[in-house]
Image 1 (spheres, one colour):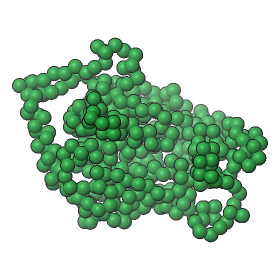
Image 2 (cartoon, rainbow, N blue to C red):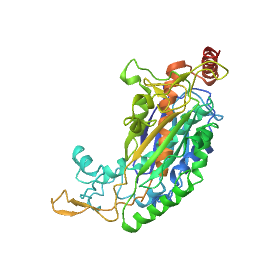
Image 3 (cartoon, one colour):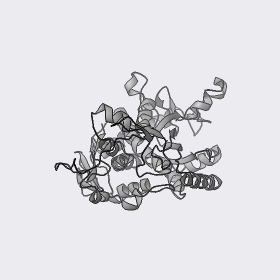
Image 4 (cartoon, rainbow, N blue to C red):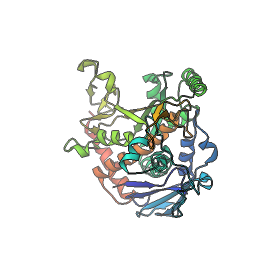
Length: 397
């Protein structure tokens, strides 16, 4: 099974990731890893850090001649900004007497609780590890799982449906048309927009909203729509809580910094409707076999994939580092003060969509490996095609 770990601080020498359990024989492209990293850096409303960094991953192990070899893949993403932080973030030389301690926490951030939890006298270590800069390593790691899935006909993509109060989900007819070519086609279309929106009127409204909060020293959050296409029926299980596919996907999305809500399909709208208007009716027979005419369940029923596109929505709160500060206090003196500002973005919702794609990919990959097994791509491909053919034949007239 695939698992990954990340290490590194926002202003340290580098971020790193180790991906364990990737099957052998997966075709991996260095340019695709770096393309995903570049996507994460884009988006209207990003701050000064994105002008400094130009993320590229160095692959240190686990790949030979462009294919995975079954051993752990290690990735390194260097921080160019490290050159400006060698004293404040020195690893062995003690510069504590030279560096001013940060003791004013930002509301809504990890600052306050992390400071207390880990017994620090300076918030800087909390800031540097809790920072969303860490997601660069996760995008690099997740890109390997995305390439694995793509070679099996499973695609992951996203778009932004709302920033602040601007925008809404695109019409179902247009969505189905775009997903017919797979979720990557939808993501490619979204990437043409500075805010990764598919509706041009919504795009302009979102850009205006971001400009507005910039002038006020404020920030904006939004909603991301994630789709996974080509997923066969039966991934996940209802048998135990830790094998439920929707729980694992929700957990992955909630692990992204500033994501505070996740729904599967149109779950919150469904909660306001009677069951007759919620559940997806079933049909079988003919050339199409098993089918549903709607997808209100978001592609998951009974905590298992049902063969339809998986649809997830994630709500990102506004970034908590504000140019116009909120009230806080100094942890050293308990004096009431304004919170401090740490270099940040006015809006990072477009980037969060790219991170969301990266974190759900290993979840789907593991559910697939749990279902069909296999240690190398040829074996996995044979087993998956046999399973898909069985499903295709079973429900035809």
